Amino acid sequence: MSISKLNDLHYLHPMNARPPFLTYDATRMHVRAADLRALRAPLTRAHTRIESLRAGGEHGFFDLPFETDSVRIVKETAAKARKRFRRMIVIGIGGSDLGARTLWQSLAHSDKGMALGFLGNPDPELLAAYTSGNKLWWKETAVCVVSKSGSTLETMSMFFAVREALIRNVGLKQHVGHVYVITDPNHNALHKLADDAGYSLIPHPLNVGGRFSVLSTVGLFPAACAGIDIDDLLEGARWMENQRRKQKAASLPAQFAAMHYIAYKKGKRMHVLMPYAASLSELAFWYRQLWAESLGKQKGKEHVGPTPIAAFGAADQHSQIQLYNEGPNDKVVTFLRVDHFTTHPKVPRLGKGMESYQYMSGMTFEQIMHAELEGTSKALYEAERSNGTLNIPAITPQSIGAVLMFYELATAYMAELMGVDAYNQPGVEAGKKIAKEILTAS
Image (cartoon, rainbow, N blue to C red; front, side):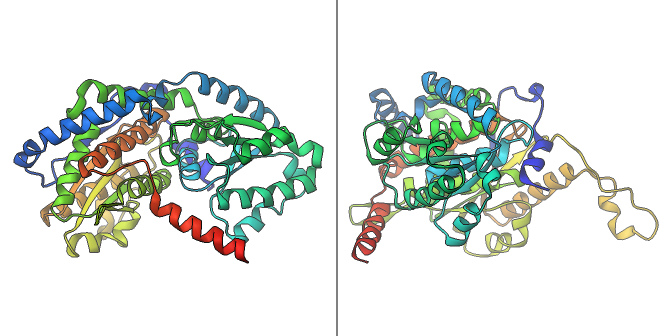
């Protein structure tokens, strides 16, 4: 079954889309109340600093759920694209790729919009597969290139290869209407290229970095093209941000960060996200980039940062949990539980000769998933391994919007507690510079 067909099964009707869109059970985190009390003042200072950053407009992701102008542009442009094209190739890397992938995998529906394909790695064979379509395929295909700087090596090289195939199949003049460009609205090289060619330009917000951009045009445009209700998505994110503003340092993102910071200081340097839903595995990879690039930094002479790990339940109970249970006690596991799936297939009623399997007879697979998660969580707790569970009522745009905003906010609080800049990435830039020098010298 294709992932788009799979997604059709778990999208719930609106009666399930009411707040709270996200809750957190921390009873198995092995965090002492005394440690949380000791962190109260630093956490309050972190909140004050975050509010200062938000008010100053330096980092705009806090306000993305309240945006109207860019959302209007996205909806109008996507509506026209859906009428013309059956599919879209999204070309980007890192935050320009992972957020849109997460939205597509978790929320897209085969009958509501365009199919999305992603070029997020300059792998020759992957690129060859995407550029080998016939003329009819290309006639029905749009291309969206995403690069804030307009100079990303991987993204631009892939775009030029895809553009060549597009021109070859639909013609130089006609290809212009197939291309959408999301980049810095200032006049960088990609903006100029798009302007000169006549491509559709969608602005990338100036004050939002790639890994915090999923709720901006970067994620919203592909999502809207795929038929995802971006108003509902932003409703969930807005709910989470409003909760944070009201509850301040007592909010869910702040408290989650505080518990992870306490665990980090006690040597638990591996932070796992393990969703129990097939359509949320990309979310774990999105989290991995967000947590790693934001928190892994050089702080003076010290090198700091937790290592994020993407896992997937229940499958990874049979690949990683042995390590988590009996290996080094250096991890914090966060499970993501879906309270209600739309469909409820069951194990058939088992009769004579099936005595060994009677415990599963007639059970729904939702019950099996929940039992697997609870069993894993309890076993870790009894082994004195820290774990907590995020709960969403269902996989809806609102709940996914809330989860995405939650993790971005928790990252901001964690960075403040650690005393690092969540928004730069000098360790990435160094490698990019060397790669460019190698290619220039070739």
